[in-house]
Length: 378
Image 1 (cartoon, rainbow, N blue to C red):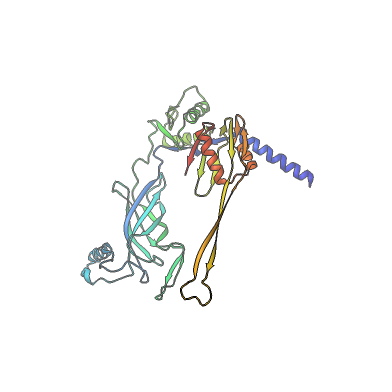
Image 2 (cartoon, rainbow, N blue to C red):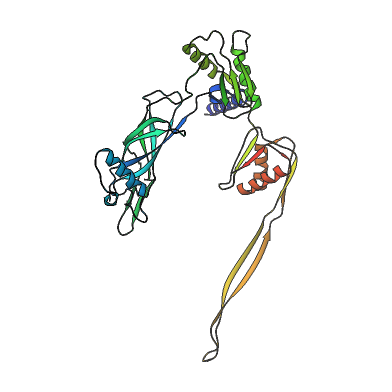
């Protein structure tokens, strides 16, 4: 057992050392390819088949657009019904949203999200009618339809009792969308340069990506150059003469390993008391003093009654307070130069600070100019 524990400890230390020394990632994990962005689509449609939980009829509080849409739909089928006579609650107006992955082809299927637009109480059991989806410019690129998957329920009785699980006004149609046209800027031209967009723009990282691509080339030709902190431009070599060869070339670039440079950051969430700091955060020499002042206030009722058989007196209730102030001795710690975050956390825990006190300390250290990192407070 001791030999096993020793072996496990050595393995963990070796893994930690490898991660800290190597620290390289694939280029495809830190960049996105030009023309490789997702396409956001949106549409307006109707969900039918609801069991009386759809939008309310027209009136002072009804969804007027739902009745208008139903009337327009029926007219397309040759049925004319006055809007004033439509009283159905089995229909709900919805907004349909979806995201199409880059380089999708016509006929590719994807999930769509359906959200109630009117005053329906639930979309459970509904079916989305065929709904065209368009991009922000108004071009139709897809169609969506199908039964909704809610993953919850919303039951309300006449007496006012309500039983709810999850959110029943938003549903999903798995593979409910089908691409009918190719979005613009989805193709490549190997005769023109291609750009790589860094997810986290950085001068050092973009330069290292360009160097890694150039070093992987068999000849001395430099095909990649960093044109900005967020863009690396690639010129395809003369050996690339077809779309197939271009895909092979880009695939070989994506698998290259590069050492990224991460900005030193300390992220603080004051609502939850969470503190996350990067490994490159260092702290200059600083003195931290902390002391707590606690005030306890107690109130006790005192009842004053008149004497027996007295006709003029009355019972009076008064409050007597007792206030005590307890002030702890201040605790002081000196943080030396080039202290890491782990050393600072250990020192603050030794002082006995709680998470919210540590947040205040980090803010004060930043204002003192001793925190060598960017402080982000959410």
